[in-house]
Image 1 (tube, helix red, strand yellow):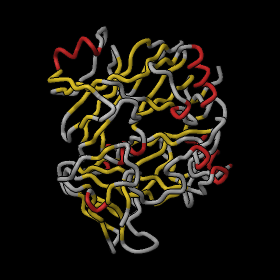
Image 2 (cartoon, one colour):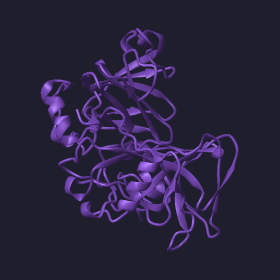
Image 3 (tube, one colour):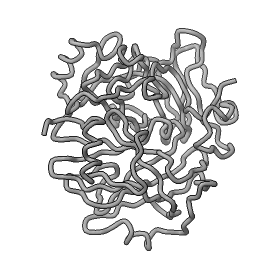
Image 4 (cartoon, helix red, strand yellow):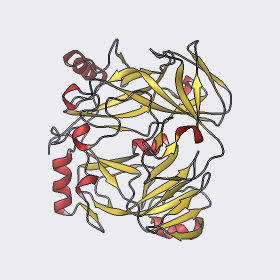
Length: 360
């Protein structure tokens, strides 16, 4: 098999062979250019702690140790409360062949709601990582950090990407790709991926980001452009190119660079350096082929940064490198690119909240 991230056409072939199974059957809307959306099942377990199954153990068998109570996830919806940990069996299951591994990540809107969502599996020793040959169910661990949310069966909070072999580009390969087709506007900082920095000097005005309010109502994840942003977010403004991050607070900021993902590549956001400071830029994010690409209606899209400060207040400066994009080859170019043709929500984006909010 060709080395690389498997595109939409190969995902359809895996589904046809039963290597990706689901009850009910997978619908076309789940298949993205380089990933598959996963759907919540019909029960949620409230846990007293997050856990991994561990070698030789099934998730189901560990529930006796951690389950506090269980709730039916119905069409009317069930509330997952802020600060609590839940486990939801997913509708999909896997029977991976040799040579195919998988990695999961939260969807963009999930990350922008500070909704920590991680995949766990039977015998798993890592979150979001699935080895070749895995056969079994999939589960989502969900921990709402900033807002309580209402969920229903079939909702898609996380996604899974499949790989054949080692697909990550080395720094020399990434430099060549950037020379062939600029991956960022301006100078490329390439060090174990493509570095990107924070924009705290916007071209217009002084709005640089948003901070989540601590006491808000419930967000129904089916309601799009429904909630007034001001009910859930405080505006963060700066006229000096610097902000002070508050410990424990969650921020939405934006990258200074406009990013391009060529059609024959994919990318994943990753932390830049653990010692860079007292904050974390969430690396919940797959970037699909065509993101920010002119042919897909992007013409350079900026990366939204989901930032949480740790124990001490931290001064974040304009242009500070805060994360990196790790680029990977596609096994082949997908049939559909990220963009308006498949109703992608964040093509051509700048500073932008999740799709559930409306401005003004």
